[in-house]
Length: 382
Image (cartoon, rainbow, N blue to C red):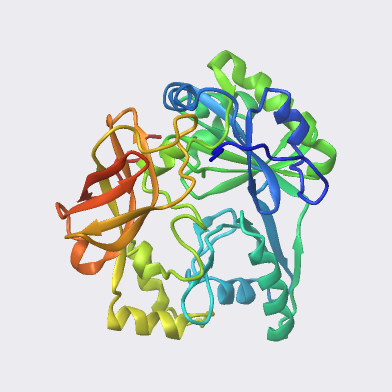
């Protein structure tokens, strides 16, 4: 089987506003995210990983679209969409905001930014959320306006990310806390900068307004500022997100999983008891009270690198066995150069989820031993 076929470029799939700018740096492989071409790698993925860990990287994440909610009922509507309690959410603050359907299944896992009193951005890589928001707005009867705004982010991620951001903006960015944001003007461009990202190292996202007009200008401005700090253009470094216990929608969670299965250790799950009602609230309370049958746990896997020999990707999930019976699956896995071992996430029955439980995993090399361990595998460094 050809594990690395071409992805053809044509008009049915959308292109990021940064498509041509990022492409000039020699992209070698795309994936498709949110019906859009998403640069996956530009060279050796292990070299890209070490650039992230030691220096700084620039990513085209224009596939993260902003589902923008505005209007007199914007707060009430946004709170109805997500299971997160927004009663204490201040302007310029953000939250990791799971969107659930009526039965508690996960529709999307965006980062939510409150950029104004009645202006909210759900930054999502799942196109389903936009359609869901349109439908909810219609049937709720609330006075809101839903749109996919002309706002596209780039990510600046890596150990020297703060140095680049200070050069681009000013020292005020040093005081920014994780999941907070601030509005800036950069060489005539309107941007919102947030301290967020898809890695477990220091990182920021620069959300460009009027992206169709200014995308090329922003890209070159950021890239030039990064050169004195060793900046490289890369794709998303999935090794780092797995090391940090960061989940990826459609890989580690989907419509058939619920928050108590995949994020059971997060204290904010208690927010389901909030006074304001949200879609899926009753189901999630029932799931919590009854308990779940399975959990997404961290695993260490023996043997050689479990990922594809080119970019560490997993074309398919790995079946998980215990005592000769298939009991679950590994949803994401990689070889961690810093830990010098294979790590990943496995969905397994609750009675197999305790740390130090021994399992067997079918990798591309054959059956290997896996051990359940605590996640994240590496803490946040930033």
